[in-house]
Amino acid sequence: MTDNELKTNFTPIWVIVGMMCFIQSIYILLAHLLQQPLQQAPMMAESREILRSVFYLIAIVIFPLTNLTRHIQLRLNQTIASNTSLNKRYLVTVMVSQIMIASIGSLGFIIFILGDGFNSLYIFSFLAFLGFFLYRPKEDEYQNLKSHYHER
Image 1 (tube, one colour):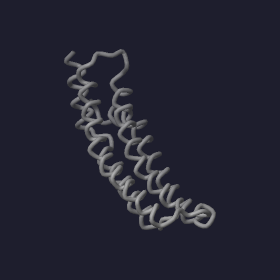
Image 2: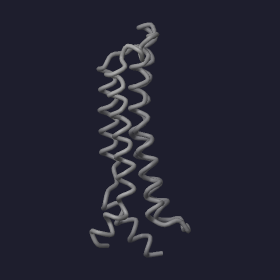
Image 3: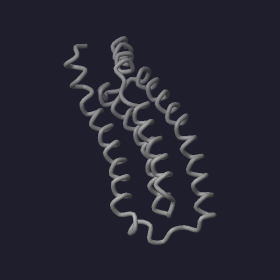
């Protein structure tokens, strides 16, 4: 596959990744611009600390769960015959990974709205951006799928 074909195939996939990063950036921007209106009715500190701990636990679980889900989807893309094009199948694989990771950033925004500080928002946002990087579209994955796809 030529570089031009690969670039054409990856364009919609990178648009999805870019949109996820943009949405996470909007969370941070909104938090800075609208801190007072967003935190009108903060949650009690004890309850918020428990909820924050639960959110951290969810974030910790989402990373390996995303890795497992992506691995399963990639194997299914290789083994199951379908009328759907390989590009669309890989797009769905990347989208599912990105959406799962984006939920971590959403948890940070939720805990911020409930009265927590910017520190938690930044930590969850950093984890989301890290996940966006880790589960980005990868040429070697796509090439591997393409070789298995043509073998059938």
